[in-house]
Length: 183
Image 1 (cartoon, helix red, strand yellow):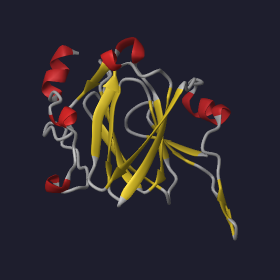
Image 2 (tube, rainbow, N blue to C red; image 1 turned 180 degrees about the horizontal axis):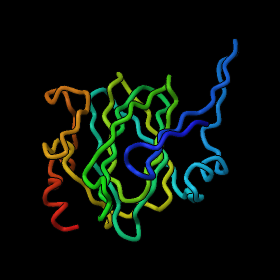
Image 3 (cartoon, rainbow, N blue to C red; image 1 turned 120 degrees about the vertical axis):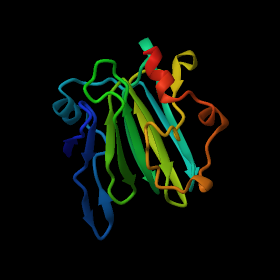
């Protein structure tokens, strides 16, 4: 497994070693020991989540705050997405900055997202199945989020706005300027 830290400290793009032959392919999608070597600590994942979405769906930007904050290890099982993280760790030198990474069936990349980040993705293939591990249990009362179309964040979701499918909850989410003022 190769790891490359993004410009956001603690956030890593992980690329597995893939073994291919006439039968297909094989790779380790998760190895606790190797991940600990990369991160410098061993996350304990306690919940797996999976979603399936069609082209144009934008999910996010979401996070859990406080004692229910979550680190995530995300990947795509089918299709292609633009995965986006925004650093909202108070005092971080990259506070408010984002990284976008294409995750898809072909590149088999994963993204490790530490606690303290907003997360979202857009589906740029016909369909996509998205899978992620979390190191904390979901808690509805700890949910927080930012409108994915907030112009201050200026995220390129790689989908024309008129073709985006966004939940009412995400459309009605607070703007980053307000989020910043309460954190």
